[in-house]
Length: 161
Image 1 (cartoon, rainbow, N blue to C red):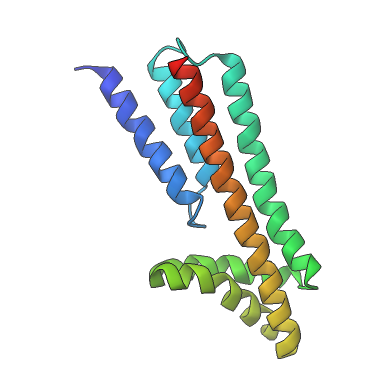
Image 2: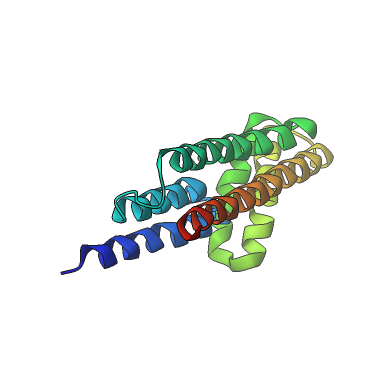
C-alpha cells in the first residue's frame, strides 16, 4: 500500500474542508487548511516545505483566527451592539446553513437582531446592531478566504519552485 497517496488524500480532504469552513461558520476553516498543508508537507517528509514555510503558514492561521474574531466584534461594537448580538449572529449563521445561500447571508443578521430584541433593544437599535454584526462577519469571512488562498499559494509556490 502506498502511504503517500493516502497522505495526499487526507491532505486534500482537510484543505477542501478548510476552504468550505472559511464560508461556513461551523467549521474552523483556516486551521483546517493549515492542517491539510502540514499533512501534505509531512507526507513528503518535509522535502519541499520546510520549517520557515510552516512557521509562515502557522502565523497566517493565527492571524486569520484573530481577524475573524476581531472583525465580528468590531462590526458589532461600531453599531452599538451588545455581545449578545455577536452570539446571536453566530447562531443565526449556523442555522442559516440549512437554508442555503439566502440562509447563510441572512442568518447572521437575523440572529443578531433577534438577540438584540431579546435583550430589550428597540427595533431600530436591533436592526443597526444586526447590520454592523453582519458586516463584521462578512469582512472576517472575506479575510479568512483571502488568507486561506494565500496559504495555498505559498504552499504551491514552495512546492513547485
